[in-house]
Structure formats: structure tokens, C-alpha cells
Image 1 (cartoon, rainbow, N blue to C red):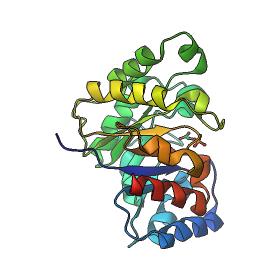
Image 2: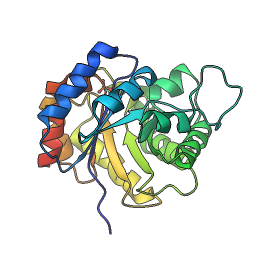
Image 3: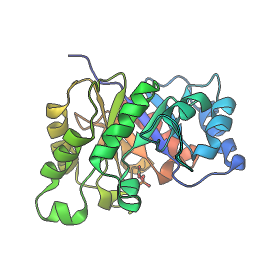
Image 4: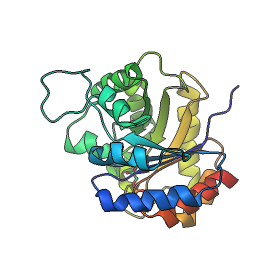
Length: 244
Ligand code: PGA
């Protein structure tokens, strides 16, 4: 069985102006040659400038969403091909903030992931239960249901990454226990169409908890929000993944 690649992915969300590219450059210049992939997903307005400013470094650049359609009359939307043309290699899809704020269903996420694949992008598909769903004992049902419905045909390790992000752990400073993360990741690995697809954990990953999370068997990396905005914090998380 091919082993999944390790990936540290930063999600800047709706944060970052041109001046903040200095933080991305500081991150890149502080990295020697990590054994894991390193990715920053800034807002769409910064993708092109970040890709130019990080050219030649190990840090890859990605988007945070794309349209399901390839082109056309979709005011305000951005196609996967446009992201690729701007220098993106990856795109985050189905983040819980988009599922909640924009009503994105798993079926729409699968269509977007198909569009990403068609444009040559790696789709990072996000899944996760709400606190109420966890309290009701529905975590595995919810997450495995989202996985089945959000994956497009032809999803393999070369074009797809899965991020398990419990909604209640995002931006809250709360994380599941290591056993809870392991339970979900083990269940996800067993259902992947390609066992070498990387499985990231996301939700309040910080320098202080990264090493113990990366020591979990089926955790191949992290999707990091708040802590990816600061080069020192994200750099420390990357170092923990590198050492795992
Ligand atoms: P957080 O966000 O690291 O700030 O909790 C994670 C995410 O939403 O991807």
C-alpha cells in the first residue's frame, strides 16, 4: 500500500492584504527542505501575488473555493481554471464555513471537486460534524456520509486530499481527544477509494498540540486556520509534521 503524503495546509480564510505577503515570504525563507508538502491558501485576491512572491520556494499556493461550472455567466464566482491560471495547485472545497454560510451541499462540493480535477487542481475536501451531531452519537455517520457524497468519480491520491474538521473545533481552541481524532481518521481511511489519499485533521491546530495530533496513525497532516497567519506558528506546525 502506498503511503499517503504528508501535507501542512494553511487556510487564511478572509484575512490578508498585500502587506501580509511578507508573512508568507518569512515562512518560506524559514523552511529548509521539509519532507512534507506545505501549502498556503490565501483569499483569491492574493493568489497570483503570493504565487509570484513564493516562486522557487517549497510553499505551494491554493484557493479556498471554486465554482462548479467551468466558465460563463456566474457573477462573482471564480473557476478552477482561473485559480490554476493564477498559480494555485490546490483548492479547499466544502469547508464548514461554506457549507454553513453558503448552504453548500455535499453534492455541490462533489461537482466543485470535479471541476477542480478537470482544471488539474488537487481538491482538499472538508468534512466534519457539528457539536450537536457529536453529542447525538452521529459523528461517524455524518462524516462518512459527507465523504461518500462529496467525492467525485476518479478521486485518487494525486488529485484529492480529505480534511476532517469537527465544526465545533474550528477557531474555538477546543480539539477532540486524540482517540476521537483517531476513530474518525481510521473510519475515513477504510472508506477511501484510494488508501493513499492524504487525511488532514483541522480545527484549532497549534504549535502546542501539533506533535501529538501528527503522532496519530492515520493523520497525514493538518489544515490550519488561525495559526497559519503567523509564519512562526505555522513554521512550528510544519516542523512538527516534518518530524512525525
Ligand atoms: P482553525 O481553523 O485552525 O482556526 O481552527 C481551521 C480551519 O477552519 O481550517
